[in-house]
Length: 77
Image: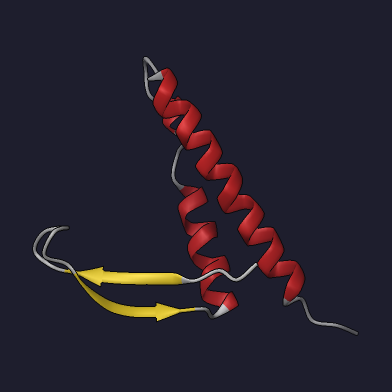
């Protein structure tokens, strides 16, 4: 599966314009790892059950993406 990272910039989301797109596997793995460093929404007290489920799925997807990219682009001996 191809992954990519997109950067938008603008004063608001509605006014944001595309700045860059990259399919560089090193960048994709780095972004996924960085996003996973953020605390899970379940760390909130009290946790919002719906937000916690969404966050859990997002974190699982990011973990999978990071593992796939690292496995596909690992140095071979």
